[in-house]
Image (cartoon, rainbow, N blue to C red; front, side, top):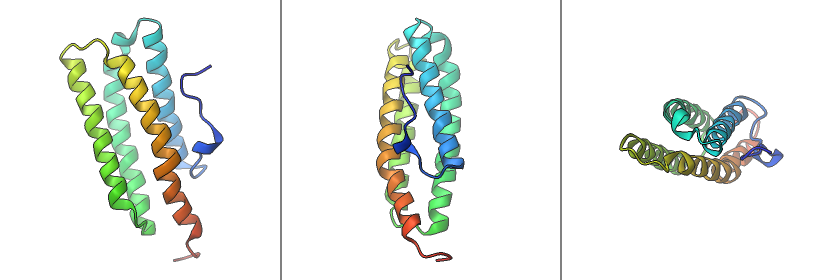
Length: 136
């Protein structure tokens, strides 16, 4: 059983946003597996770098889509994204400073943030899009 299981209640668009989210979930599971096998230190640097880059790209795509449809909660969403990126940057700094617990912390932070963010914030955006009149 994976550390973070993809579930139906995480589905947003059956398209690019879900593909991004699934990729992030896969990265969380890779990191957790490596940490569980005592290889967390070996993979954390690679995963952290990839994760930060991919997360920034994903969040930019998500925000662009929200802006395109006029989602009224965009600014609040951006604030949440910025906090998350800052949290990941802090973990990277801790890792670079030699903190050995970063790999397991990172797995937990990612799983919890993704789970809550998708199920709450991203679902709000999806509900807004679904309620919009066609072409509006």
